[in-house]
Each structure stands twice: as structure tokens, then as C-alpha cells.
Length: 392
Image (cartoon, rainbow, N blue to C red):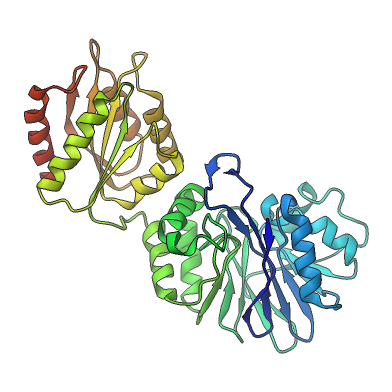
């Protein structure tokens, strides 16, 4: 774990921590590039800290905070989000700086005892509502409520003097600051669709508020501070939260027990490329991290779900993908189905039933069935299947 201190803008300092020791974010998402827990110090005539950190990085964060304060005492702690990866040091902060005021939404104040037990007697709490302004002297913060992006208490803070938005988890990404920037589009998509993705309408509501602001810098709680191409990042969030596809192409998800279904899926991918589809993403669900498969499914307008039959139902990795897509609000896509079953094919029927429960999923009527090993005779029907997918 490494602490980072750098100037974001005059009077605003990054004091977050990179964590390369973490293997699973939220105990479910692999993070091979690590993760950053971002926090910021704002110095006007008064001083404010924006969020704390995860308990595992508390020592490094406190060292950064005290170094950046350079002997000063903070007047405020801005609590944008109470999830433990950002709130674990609130109690410690309040013990060290009992004179500081905690600034948060009314919803956060109601939830605070769940994460600060007990709330110390005499702890000063200021609740703010939409549009309230905190004057720090030379710099100010205008508060923007962002409920369900992705928790109900979330708020953002806009500094008009620096045209900078502290965006909470929005515009965040997996990956530590020293390793993620080149991978931002993929890691940010994986973060968005798995962490925030279910709440597209709430993200849209917040984007409408942000559209009235002049934003030159975005300071999220995970991942890099964004200082260039701001319309690009906001545009991606608009696309993602509208459940529109980001890419042109076809996503193929495959759950294969012995490799035969995967061989058929890969042949289908080659045939689609031969027919002119430039971008075909094949997700081997027995190898690929599920969070990446979820993200890629959302990024394409068409999907082909290929799976082996299993226990008179569906091979588990495909079941888990479809379950995850349903939970994250997968919608407004076209889908085709390929199944494999040696004696009683059941995967297609199960996949169709699961997809039918999702909003706006247009499923191709016919299911392609492979029986056992991928054979020469199967190639002709896959070539025909590929043509139907192109026309669908």
C-alpha cells in the first residue's frame, strides 16, 4: 500500500492511498491492478477533508492527511459516501479532530450510527441539502445530492472556483493510480456495470444536474483524477446509464464443460468476423472473471449465449452470468442462443426463460442445438446461424 500526495488544483490536494495487496474488491470482484481509495484536502481560509478511506489503508491515509495539513487543523470532514471503503476512518478522524464538523446529507446522518458506533457525544454534524453552499473562504463547495448512485445517502460537492466536482463513486474505476490510466475504459466499464449499473435512471438524474455546471476536473473516490476530455467521460456515463450499447459488434458468452461448446462458439465468432463483424468478443465463462463478462455484455448491442446443458438445466457459469445480468438491469439488447446437450438438451430453454424475465430483450426464435462433440456436420448449421444473427 502506498500513500499519494499531489496537487489537484490550487488549494486542493489528493491524499488518497493505492492498495496493491487487495485481491477481491467487495469480496467479489478481482482487481489485478489494485484499487485506490481517494481522499482530498481543501485549503481555503478554512480547511475541509473529503472522505476518509478503507480500514486497511488507515495508517497511510492518516500520514498523508497530517503531512498535507502541515500543522493545520481541519474544520470540516465532507462525507460523500458511507460505504466502509470510504468511511472507516470517520471515528478516528473525529477522535483526533473533535472540533471538526462532519458535513453530510440528511440520509447519511440517519445512517451514520451504523458506521460510527457510537457517535461520540458532542460530535458536530451539519446536514446539507441540494444546492447548499459551504464557504471555506476563497473556495466553496456546492452540494449535489446523488441518491442511489449507488447508495441512498450519496452526495457530490462542486467547487466553482476550480470548476471541479468531487463525484463520490461516480466516474470511479478499479485499479490503483499508478497502474490504471491506460486501462481506464475497460476497468471503468467493469466498475460501473457491476457497482452502479442497476441504477441507470438515478445516474441520469444526476447527470442532468451536472450538465448545468462548468466541469474541468472530476475527482472520484476510486481511480484517477480526470482532467482532460471531460465530455468523453461524461458521454460514456450517459451511454452506460441509458443502457445504450457503447460498441458496434457482438458479444458471445460461452459456458462449456469439456470444450466442445467453446469450440462451436469460437467457430461462430470466426464466421461472424468473416461476414463483416469487426468486433466479436468471446467470453469463456469458465476462465474470464464474471465482472468482466457482465461489463462486456452491456457494451454490445447483440449477444449470443452458448452453454452446455447440466442437471436438466444450465451449466453453472452461464446461470451465474444471466443471474448477474438480471440483477444489474441488463435490457434493450438482442440475443441468440446456442445449446449443447448429448441426450436431453435443456440449456436453451433455461436461458430463454431467464432472458425473457429481463426488460426489452429480443430473443431470436430458433435455438441452435449441438449434440456432444463439435463435428463437421455442425459447421454448416453454424454458418447459417451466423447469417440469421447478422439479419436479426
